[in-house]
Amino acid sequence: MAIETHRSPRATHGRSREPHRSPRRRISPARHAPLIAAVLIGLLFTLPLLWVLAGSLRPGDKVLAGLESLSWRSVVPTDATFHNYVTLFQGDFGRAVLNSVLVAAVTVCVGLLLSATAAFGLAVFDFRGRGAVFAVILLSFMIPFDAIAIPLASTFRAWDLQNTYAGLILPGIGNGLAIFLLRQFFLAVPRELVEAARLDGLNWWGVFRRIYLPLSRPALIAAGLTLFTFQWQSYMWPLLIGTEPAKQLGPIALGTLQGQMVVDYGQVFAAAVVLTVIPLVVLLRLQRYFTRSIAGSGLK
Image (cartoon, rainbow, N blue to C red; front, side, top):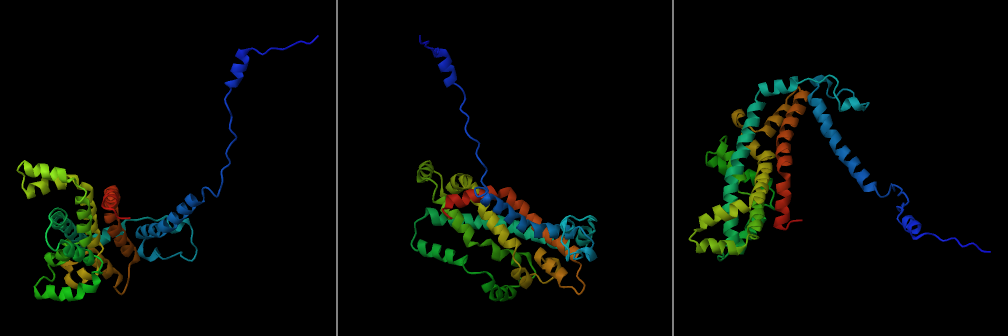
């Protein structure tokens, strides 16, 4: 006699609801190879910066000591001191840094005003020769500034602009790349807004101030960063124009420290750290606006 076993629907239904356990995925080294390579490359780029920072916190006669046997002590100073920074700012270097900050700040403010108005005219007004003017602007930032620095310095000396803040600032306020970035952003502003504003009786200056400038904050910050970095890292032009100690900029003061007969590498490294940290803080704080502006301008 055969005995039939019947499985209840509840039991079958309950078994079907058991969680499905997927097999564990094995971590593939090849899958994470790009990330590991990026971390290693980042560390290789970071090590020289850490070494300079560590050297700035060491006495001058111990900066280059122990290079034959590299270890963790090469980037982590065990005898850290701020004597190099204190001595550095007691001399002329502090005034040179202030000159660099002043020159860069005025360059950004005046340069943004000129670049924004020029970009507004090229983006909004349709006049004869607009394409030729824009082509000249594109050509201007493709030519290295050092190629025209010497004849331009002779002209500035003839205008009695040597050893003046105006002579240091003027070449940096006209930047073709800043005009290009702002023009490309202004072209994306809807024409309907401009037409509505004009119908309401707003003049062109009001359109520029009340519509274009508020909408172009990322582009303005990106253009300001362009002007700032160009002026901060310039070396040949301040060397040709700012020959007096009172008008020297930070890079020239750093070069003066390196050019003495007895070089105090502790102070040299401290000066390099100061001149690196200031633009680094500015760029890290505003980098998202620069990326957003590049994306809006169509650059790759």
